[in-house]
Image (tube, rainbow, N blue to C red):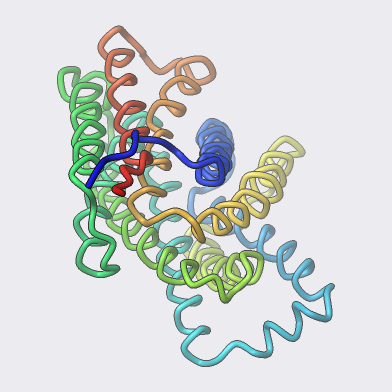
Length: 308
């Protein structure tokens, strides 16, 4: 038995690049969310974003006769899976992210979410039978070491002393667990390829957004938004949500749960850079050193060691 060189196939590399583009859009969302939270309560903000995106997606879904047939063809099990995905991925994960960002710096919230690949690697091995190769475990370990290097030595970076930090960290922790669950559910729903990405996104997001917006309006009310506020909501809904989540579900047809979650984890680097330039959050040599570990770990998880 001989070994071929470690490599990425052309098709797999294209899917990885698509997924990285989505994470760049999502990372820019954090800057917009922090700016919009000045006038929009967090749960209502999240509900408006995903509800508007869901309306657009459902309009696109129902505009095609073939897609309408696909919706009617969904069986009870598919509906349950998609609704569950929506509740975990949007209602809990995204709702927790918005609330946590109201209490913590963007870099701090990204710390909690950056632990998702480790949770997914462990859970996916047992729940999805997607066992990792030793090389991929090394990649996951590098990502985790990068996270520790980035955050642990400097308490001032992660906002430990900030007002409401305890609440923020608790909510961020819930969001991290829900994010891991949504990665597994998303992979389970998409890996068979029977459901179109637009169908998966529209149905799941519609269910999650309905609960999220209802909770936001009931608890925090519906504020009067400025033109700037509506522009932020509209951009987040149309570009960073409707388009980005549909493309993400498309990549989940080819990427395993661990692969997709580690790509998602590059947002740690992206958010830190964007927060430094646009939100004024600190960024030093220690954080820059950690970037290399995160990036290398991400690449290692993506590389397929093929045996012949």
